[in-house]
Image (cartoon, rainbow, N blue to C red):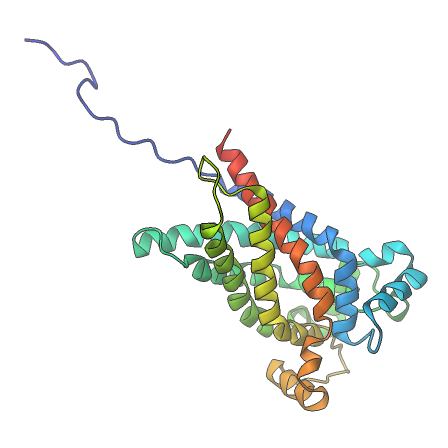
Length: 299
């Protein structure tokens, strides 16, 4: 009688699909976020000045010229260091958490559910926003004023000065609309991206080209940005409030007073530079992050 060797005649279990390690995802997400923010920082600076009212009545071009005249060409990147310090951990957590939530929700719901990105993106947005909000607060304080009208020169000075004068909770001014906005904003963005990618033409290996990823990311970011822009305006106005200069008693009061005094158009002040920077910003983020994962798995 023939003896069976170890493993002979037994079916081997299927090899589990390769996955990108969480640390690599975080590095890719953070790097993609910093590259995107740095590329569009001049547009973002002009947009924030218009949104906070510092450049009221001025065109985007006139605002940019004033920045260069008063602060030099590097003034267009004022606050970018604080922005990158905020963006790296924020996008690292955001993209990694989105993949994690998507995996968990897919397991709970049983399979690949269409439109799951709307839910995973929402949960990831809340996670990232709460974790990095003080850095976003410092970036707005730096970018939302001209250098001649503030003594703050760095992210650290903004954080320490705010804690000294307004307490630790001063770092969380505007956190309510931030969390309220992160849920639908990231949900719409990731959800639209997933839906667009599924309909985009694939190559012979079943992957979307890097051009397709850039285009899908740009479209998803533009849609979500336009829908949630009024919430972002309220958030910026809340963040610009200083101790002793309290104009709004909470986010709802800010919505009410801005609408009563300035009308619906005030909520969309700065929307054009915002949308013009959203296209390359979202495109770079999604394009680099998704391409990195594809490259890693193809090694």
